[in-house]
Length: 446
Figure (cartoon, rainbow, N blue to C red):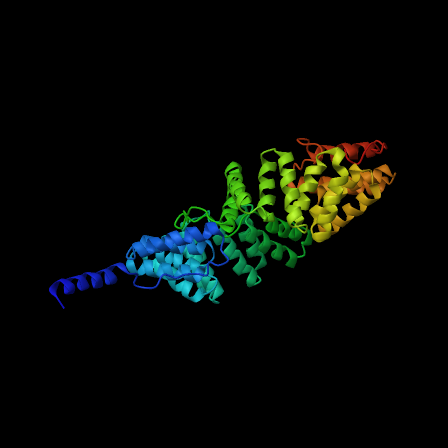
């Protein structure tokens, strides 16, 4: 072999050693992936192959995989980033988040490594506690939830974790206090609502429990609180990531930005029902009712069993007296799909009143109150219906119950057909009319 050939061979060997990845690039199955997702993944993979010794490139590929729920592949990328940059908190932390459901034992080890690098990170304590719960170590989990709260007293997730631990140990009073504190901080926290519903059900407060269960199911929030140490600043790609971003923007009140993301999803995937529904939610918030109606209707064309879209259309039509029949049809459909949720029955009653179908309205109001006995509006409506048929005693009982509930809850619940006018003054006027022996016979919709 000539000196020249030997030199070339040495250069090639150096290139292979220094420029090839030390581990194979994980490659998830992209056959069923959306084109936008495939392109984003392939771009991140190319970056790793071009810069195999770049921890940032491996971390970015891990972020891309994790965003699309290829979690094992993401964890492998973060492990390589950690090997290349062992003193950086981000890599073991993100690896733990990728593994927390599928391998909580390994996730716990990753979070412990992250905390060894940055012991003052509250979210790392929270996620370590979460992993410890999953592997059956509640005492250690409680220590880390508590430490997370010491570092960030406004961390609702940690309060929820402590509340869930107390619930699992049947310490119901403690659990209730923790979960209510969490809801003061984040009133749309689904896990807090659902855990509190369990506490209330166990202590015999069934109606309040159903209310919190409904709130938990309706929440637009998904996952834990926004994490400043893991912002996932990726260019959105694919309907799953874009839908998640849109939900977060809606929850944060950034409706215009949410609508922009939903426009992109609908343009790429007009066949998906959920983006149309969420687009309708955004348009309602922007007072663009006609456009919202079209989106909700399109969602139902794609998924006729979407109870949320039926409810949303019912509410839109209820605001238009001439559309009471359509409101009634959609609330009836929602009640059939979600028979154990009071709002559908209450909406059905409101629409029936608009159609002057008073017996149907009474039956729907009674159905709503069987599910949630503490609905002031339902008691008010039943009181007016009783007064209209001359049953003063029943009318007074219903109206007084409505008044007590409103005072107890310190609620100013507006009627759907009278924006801005509080319910409590109407209840009191109806009671005054009964006291003057003059039943309010004009309309149960007033």
